[in-house]
Image 1: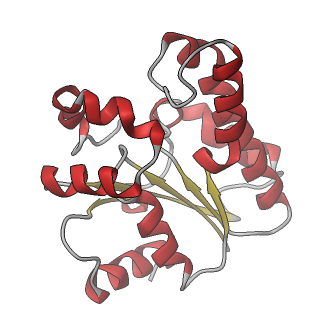
Image 2: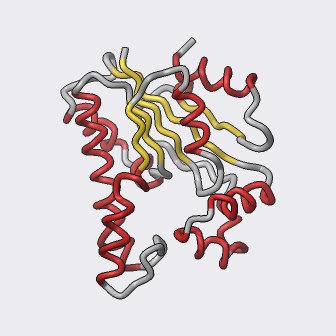
Length: 196
């Protein structure tokens, strides 16, 4: 059975790190929304005279946010239709609330839930200092707003999004990524993703 695994959570929780670790045990198309749409979004923001790293502006939210997510969705659908396992990395907050979204993805790939095992790993952190140091350490300009507005941003760190998809509760894992990503934690993730 094909696997479609979503790694969701706010910035700095380690979604990409967790996904990379899990990819050692499960070959999959590795689709990070920032990688898929980032260059285009930055170019368009710059053309508008806006900060190319600002994903919190009204212009981004109104004109580019859905474009970026829909492009990632299209790449996901192509990979599923080609028989690949897929890892999707991004917050997906609005998409998780929309019950029809996952149904549309599977239907567009001409697949069903009987053929694709959909899982959601919500990556959270209880350790705010660790999250701050991770965001500083990755050194991307798109994190400038977060760091300059840390008081507002940190309220979202252990945020668990509403998940309105028609999938079993056993297909959702809330994963606290505080501390070291130990072999035991990786084994927990592996068993969850593979359904063992």
